[in-house]
Length: 66
Image (cartoon, rainbow, N blue to C red; front, side, top):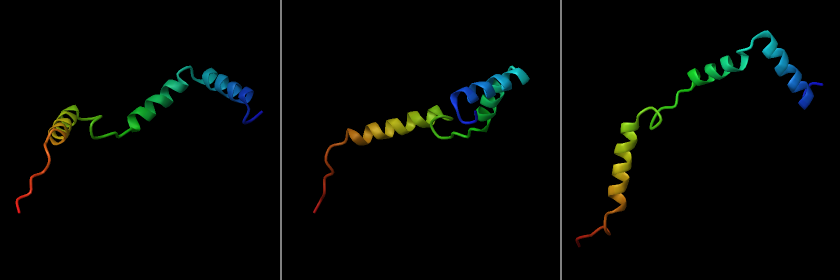
């Protein structure tokens, strides 16, 4: 039954039988392994970047002196 829906349900039941927190532990490992940086880790950086983008988008046309 490997690779079928029934086989997957059977495997899930077996995993939970061995360890009731099996899937919670897997999820925790994934969360700890994540290394998202940038805006997810630093909201202040997001605020600064947004302010810069807002200023740029509000500027008028560039004036060239010839």
